[in-house]
Image 1 (cartoon, rainbow, N blue to C red):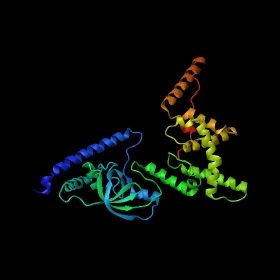
Image 2: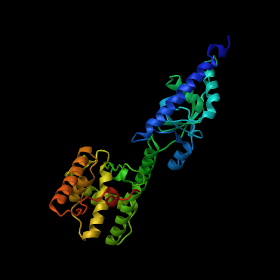
Image 3: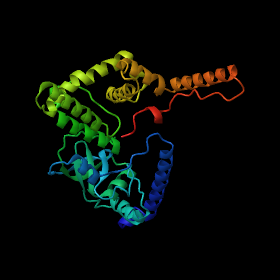
Image 4: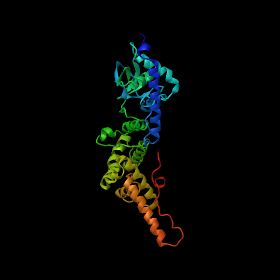
Length: 330
């Protein structure tokens, strides 16, 4: 009995159609998700961001399929679950499925390993077929690429950019060594550059005060001790972070610093940091109940104003929206 008799091609075709349906459903569900369904990462993009060293061969071994997050050249042909996205690959996919169930099986795939995750150099269809057949591991020839940036299987593009920016921020400032207790985590890409700008301004004025030029690392230590930490203490005392469950202290530092400068420009002398932080919580809280109560309060204020004045429409009493009052997106 031949291999094809043992595993009919029709079974592979039916399996492929099921995968296409699952892929379509995942794509539709991602439209209603606050965080889109992750796609495969491009190894070229990762390489450009991380600037890693040369790879080292680690031989052939079994690797977890769930840790494969990207591809060298076919990252647009599959989603993160390795469901097929390109109809042109259907026949190849079915042939590989049939071959996997034959007596000879399939050769190992080739991957790059970067920390805990893998990028397929050759064998994307084999990974897709293996996942469709419920396999948890696959044989691979591994080339490991060293990096200082920790990468995990739940990584998406924004996470990758943030981790890369964080590593560069630490490399430039040395705060991971001079202040190892510091937790300066940001949740939006592009904002570590803002912190470096703050350190640069602090370095300039500190150099004028001391009459000598400081290194970036020296200025970063002074900035952390005398600029960053006082704001963080104010944020902690006001418990404003409770109103922003998806943000970090470093996020609030940038927000407080930005609004403090706007208030200084408008009124000359800004209020204390804790008052700025409390004001931000009052106006821009991320908690649904808080947002509802603020909206209800504005409606009642407008209704009372309308009832106590002439029939002419009352002037708007709304608070400025985020697009008018919050710092611009990076």
